[in-house]
Every structure is written in C-alpha cells, then in structure tokens.
Image: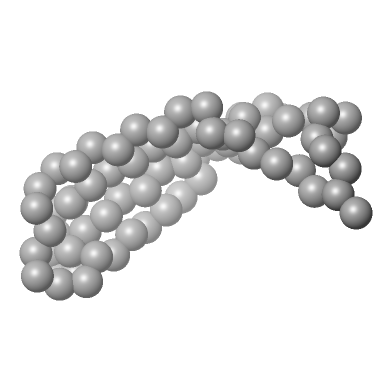
Length: 70
C-alpha cells in the first residue's frame, strides 16, 4: 500500500454559508510521479457563490520508501 503525505494545504473561507447543505466538488489537477495536486470548491446548496476554496499538494513516496503492508 502506498501512502501519500500532505505537503501543503490551503483553505480560503470566503463567506458565511447559507442555511442549507454544503456541497463540495473536488478534482485532481495533476498527478505526477512524486506529487498530486487537487482543489475543492464548497458552496451552499442553491447558491452560486463559493463558501470556501481549498488547494492541496500530496507527496507520493516511491514504492521502495513505502512501508510494507501485510
């Protein structure tokens, strides 16, 4: 099993959410050999404006540096 380690995580809280469910949409922007970069946008259900925006980068260790699982 390969593990990913968080190298950076940034969250911008843009406005107070409305009195509704929060909806999050996540996407991977890039997956390389050593790093994976993603973003998440969060909105209140039924509202067009963002409540929060997050970006993150994960370090993906090479198989020889990953602990063995079993």
